[in-house]
Each structure stands twice: as C-alpha cells, then as structure tokens.
Length: 95
Image (cartoon, rainbow, N blue to C red; front, side, top):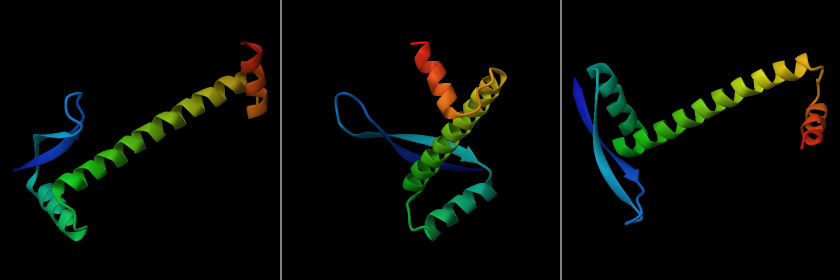
C-alpha cells in the first residue's frame, strides 16, 4: 500500500493561509494511477487532490439538489401544482 502525504489549505483566524499534512492509504494500483494522472496533467498531487475534492463536493451538492427537486416536484404534484409559477404563488400567499 502507498501512503501519500497531501497538503491541504486550511483557513484559520490567526493567519490567512496555512496548510496541514494528511496521510491517506490506498491500494497500490490506485496509487500508481493517481501518480500517473498527476504527471499526465502536470499537477502536483496536492493540487490534483484539491481539484478532485472540489469536483466531488460539487457532485454531491448537485445530487442533493436533484433529490430535493424531485421531492418538491412530487409534493407539488400531489397538491395539483404543475408549474413553477403556481408553486411561487402558493409560497408567496403563505408569507
């Protein structure tokens, strides 16, 4: 197993920017792919990890949004609301 030390930005109140080192373990084949990818993209492993992490966070947020949108559409449909304008009208009536 490979162990990588990855530096991440951490914001704190005393200094504007600081970094902490973390160690992650992964199977050798994934570690090799990760290393090859960082070379292919001409990025160090820390930068690549940060970018991958940001992409993953975005994916999770989009998935959560779609789930909430599906839930809301189902609830609205049960109330006979089929357009965004109808939903907005109901929301503003309740305020």
